[in-house]
Each structure stands twice: as structure tokens, then as C-alpha cells.
Image (cartoon, rainbow, N blue to C red):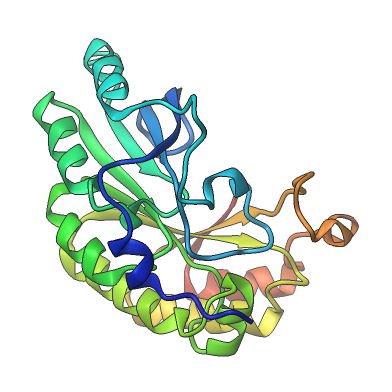
Amino acid sequence: MPEVTAEADLTDLAGLTIGGVTPLSTTDWPGRLAAVVFLQGCPWRCGYCHNTGLQPRCAAANAPRWPDALAMLKRRVGLLDGVVFSGGEPTLQRGLGEAIAEVRAIGLQTGLHTAGIYPAQLDALLPTLDWVGFDLKTDLGDAAAYDALTGARRSAPDVRRSLEALLASGVDFEVRTTYHPRLISDDALLGMVQMLKDLGITQWVLQRWQANPDMAQQALAPGWHWPPPPVLNRLRSQVPATVLR
């Protein structure tokens, strides 16, 4: 497995590179009407990624520019509750903090989707955020399994640091996991739910894995199902608000 050096990726970037913008979403920030700004670039290579076009750090020639996206957001003040910065991995981009400040300056709330790849960058951004959607891949207690899903070495320790920083911040958040039984075992689910309980997290979203025509793992498509009822019951005995989405 090739090694990914997260900090090298970060220092190579400048400004804000956008892969796309969704003017209105009712699903990317639960309970909010939000625009979504998809930022380009991610150092991980999760096989089930639904935004593979956002993995490279270079955007398409016709990708939106941040000044144009901000102008659109200004026109939608009063219609939107906030803006979610998604990706890719948005914390990879050094211009994110300034963009968040500009969104807050026009009176909109700010949300972030992150996999916790860059704990120091996330920690610095947390005071400026109203909500975080945190993507937990699998059991952090099994570092090898985490690396196998992300395609990057030593990914679990940074994710743990990011999750701890999020909890300490007091920022509203949602922890969610994309689930497929051949990617996340029952034992991994039970390890995850025990960790969440120990951290005092009372809600966990299991997101349905969906086939992507660009994915190399098309063989997984016929084998998808939710965890069996006995496993779900054990999960909910630890974290009662375990939601299937």
C-alpha cells in the first residue's frame, strides 16, 4: 500500500480549489437548508468513495471559482440557513479558514464534512463552525483495518485526535459511517459502538453503501444488507440513537 503523507499534500496547496457547488440541499446538514461547496482534493483512496472526481487536487477547467460561489451565496442570504464545506477532504485546503470567515460575515452558519484526516487543521477551524459531519470509517481500535479502508498508513491515530478535538469543542456534530457488511464486520461495529459510548456520543448514523459505476468494488453490490437485527439490537443497547440512513 503506498504511503500517503498528509502534511506534504497540505503544504502544496494554496487558496481554495472548488470542485462544485450545490445551491440548496436538505440532506447535507440535518435540519438545515444549506448550500454545499465541494472542495477539491483528498489524500485517501477509500474504495467506496462517491466523490472520486474530487480526489485529485486539481479541479476541472470549468470548475467554479470561490468569488463567484460567494457572490451566489450572498444572493441566497435569507433563503439558506448555512453553508457546508464538503469534499474531498476540505481541511486539506489552506484557504478554508478565510472562506468560512467570509460566509459567517454575510450572516450564514457554517458546517463541515470531514474524515478527520488533519487534526491540527480541524482544531483550528472548530471555533468558527456551527456543525460538523464526522465520517468514521471503521473501528479505530483496529489500525490495520482503518488503513485498509483509507488506503493510507497511520490514518486511525489522526482520526482519533480529530474526534477528541471535536468532542472537546462543544460544536454540534453528527458521527456517521458508510456501511457494507464486507467492509465492516460485526466485530468492528461492536468495537465502534463501544468507543462511541465510552466517549459519551449518543447518536450514530449508519449510511447505506451504494454502488458507484466508477468504483473498482462493483463485486460488493449484490452483497449489501443492513446489519442483522441481533447486531442492531446490540448496537442500540450501547448507543440508543443508532440511525439507519
